[in-house]
Image 1 (cartoon, rainbow, N blue to C red):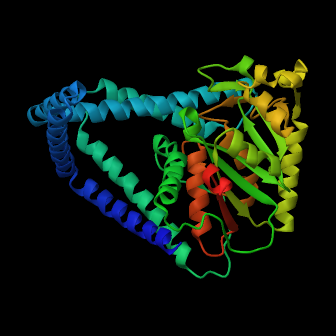
Image 2 (cartoon, rainbow, N blue to C red):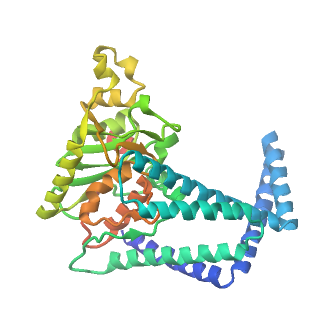
Image 3 (cartoon, rainbow, N blue to C red):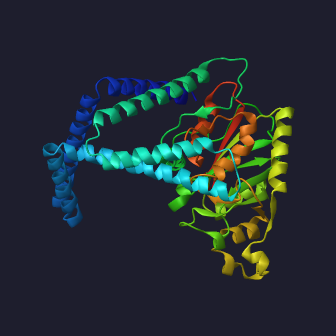
Length: 422
């Protein structure tokens, strides 16, 4: 735990120093990045060329030549890396703006109000994105300075997390506020990176206490992040359990899938925790990160009221195996996740009637936003300034909060197929 807290100070300091340098001498920083890129391409090209002579694989020769060619362009045409930086960041801004716009449309359909900031960021993202794409004379120094400001703000957050982690406070209370997070595409990689780290410890035989407790008393609220081995599962999924009943929200009705399964009818299910976790590990081949949160009687009342609202706004939705009474022919429905979930655990699924979460949107009203309904009553500060949160954003926050002294997060359990079978 001390190592993780220390890393917050190290990362925060590096970000602060890097941000200050980017603000003060942006042109030199860009030149340094260019030089490092050229050196990397040269080393990569040489390595692949040597490998080609050893293994005689044509792809090694092809990528070696490609690496040298790109290095040549970077050395002789300075505008190319500037163009790459400008176009990529412009495209990223347009994607974020498009995600916010889709959420605005969904909110309109759901008659859900109160998304003024989402509208503002939609306009800012799209206009700035197209400005970068269509303005070849945009000064790269300004973009580097903007990155520098962002790095310094992010660095302050890491330093703050590190300070709270070692400060022996007698009281520590969550406060609802906007949190500066990593870029969305990096947050999406957090669950898979966390799983890879755990797997390395297990493969190398290093001692790693996967299950740790600050107190032995049972907690009523738990947050569960699970990560799969391939495809979209690597982005992760998040849900919560209260009094050992899991509440999970997602896009489960295949008949409503839109936009490559990123949009669909909002559905949540309930299932006993004791059945859910073994099923996710053994049958779904997922790994579980479970964090236990200590709550007060007053907080429990808020949580129970929120859960009651969720229940009242749902109506029973029956899976294909239920509709067709296909329990004796499970193999026919095994490829349908809600059917196999119900068959193996007895989970009951409900469609959201109206309002927020009536329509699921992977980059908006998603499983992380649903979980935030409950954690938000406790003051969890995972609100993103751009209105988009992901399982990775929450996993990063949960781990940092767990490392802080006197944090309400009092336990962390990590379950993988390997550890369960031991």
